[in-house]
Length: 204
Image (cartoon, rainbow, N blue to C red):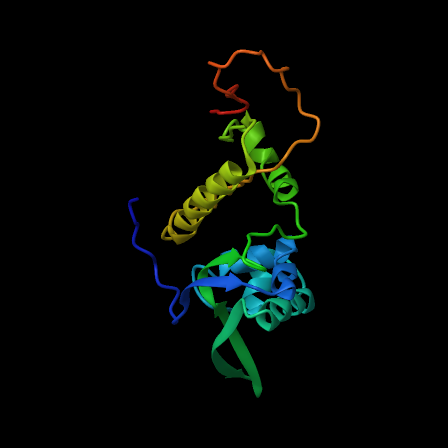
């Protein structure tokens, strides 16, 4: 897999942080906190800068920064004095984050597809939404195998150097679908089970 150079954020940080506590996973369960983490991929920032970037009150941003800091996802990388007040600049603790509580990947309480659906409305209207939806009847271990490969792709996306004037979203996932239509067994021994290969989206 080709590796792209990573733009340094201006401070030392780990390559990967593995979340092993439920409290750490819950820290990711809010869209503003994931936005803050995304912004801090580029460089360290103060609460005031993050509030300006997100258009949210400083008190609200300070609360969510505190949650991320307490969970070990953020670190204070430097401070400065502003009118006798110490201003802290926060940076990511690691470039990428993996959730592995009890040794297995777990979802957060946030439905990322709901966030992506809201974010992608304008792109859909402008016909700039690239998407695919597939269905395949496969064993659970194959689903886990594909999730590992997807996670590697997401980490590659995370490492791309930040440039240009447009931020792109990437939403991926694998989920079971109870009650999805299935053909009855054919009774033939030479058939190989396949998946539903119909495209959904896939534009522009």
